[in-house]
Amino acid sequence: MDRSEKDDAERRAQERWLEELLRAAEDDHPKMTDKQARIVNAAIEIFAEKGYSAASTSEIASKAGVAEGTIFRHYKTKKELLFSIVSPLVAKLVAPLVLKDFFKVLETPYPNYESFLRAVIRNRSEFVRKHLPALRIMLQEIPFHPELREPYKDVVVEGVLPRIRRTVERFQAEGALRADFPSDAVIRLTVTSAIGFLFVRHILMPDYPWDEEAETERTIDFLMHGLAGPRG
Amino acid sequence: MDRSEKDDAERRAQERWLEELLRAAEDDHPKMTDKQARIVNAAIEIFAEKGYSAASTSEIASKAGVAEGTIFRHYKTKKELLFSIVSPLVAKLVAPLVLKDFFKVLETPYPNYESFLRAVIRNRSEFVRKHLPALRIMLQEIPFHPELREPYKDVVVEGVLPRIRRTVERFQAEGALRADFPSDAVIRLTVTSAIGFLFVRHILMPDYPWDEEAETERTIDFLMHGLAGPRG
DNA sequence: GACAAAAATGAGTGATTACTCACTTCACAA
DNA sequence: TTGTGAAGTGAGTAATCACTCATTTTTGTC
Image (tube, rainbow over all chains, first blue to last red; front, top):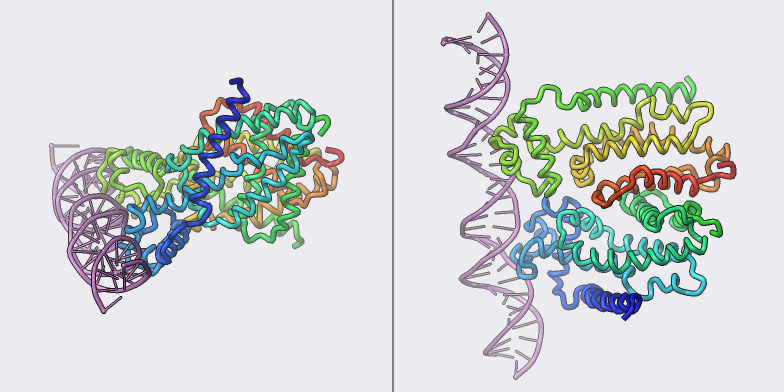
């Protein structure tokens, strides 16, 4: 079994693993009581508003219109309630990076870094818009709960990153991306520019009258000029 | 009194206001008891480790090696202890942007966006390195405490931003920076790239074997290529 | 070393916390 | 209609919380 075969096998295993995770997350809350749904919604609101530690289960129960004991019928602990919100979100956030058909555009005969960027940014911007309050909770709590990042660290560092690194290096060899930067630097600058845009757009200044289309194109244009190679 | 005179007066008022704030922050804790200093250090450690709300005053006292009551001799409330750590830090963080001699390089006859960037990034990187744990606390708590941002919002939005916007627009008119982007977009891309670098460097991956010098130059080079005008 | 002021103490306080459990209500199949 | 398991309840519990205060210890001055 040579290197690429082993990589393929590993990748397929990762994909299966994540697909299972996503199945549980996708059909949002399979058989959930009305009151349980109210609890989750109230928890998202209050966790986002005052932070996980400062939020009390009694306040969540009150806002959900249920007895405090009801929360603990569905979730053993307050932490389990937090994880039931954040865990599937982390899965859905990294899912596109691991799933097989996401990098397809980069493995065609004439791949295009720019349209790849456009697809990712559009897709993830919609995702952020859709899950904003829960994402705020995730950003707040992920530093304090290694259990939330641990499951994905290896997948990203050993699965996603090498794949994207190889792609970037091919672009560099072809002259589409500048070769005077290490591929890791190219990746870092790409990711921080994209995330920086999404962060400013949705979290830091959500009320600014953004022209989302134009601002997305500017971000991409800026990135492509900043990273252009001799034939880029 | 014409426009620029009024701006000048306002700017000088802002500078005086901030200089006073900084005086209190600069001579780090004027006459502070040994035990008070131990309390502050312990608080920084524990707030950074488990978050402000999840940290208890008893644990802080224990780590500082003082009685719990001692904390409340120096700080009326736990929140006042938090603010005594974060407030001066926010002041020191925005200080260089407001202070008069910081933009001097941009107001010389032949100003240089690139060396300005280099100076800011180097300066702030050193600042982040020096105050890392307290900065983590700031990033965690600033969303929940408007009192921490309020005092600086107007100064930045009405004082710093217009000044930098005018400078960027002059660079655009001269052809040093691209004029097909609004000045606000140029500023956003500059700030997110710089902060993105500092964030990845010091917070997200502090243990990666960074070549700080090289990575700083790459960030600047990337920015200058991404924002270059016809004569840039 | 005597004095006064400042600093530090730690047991104590009421409020709040996450969580439990004996019990009631509900949904639904037989 | 009745039986049954799941869903929901809310008073109760021990622990912990931020904070107080009467008292003791330390510090600086003559």
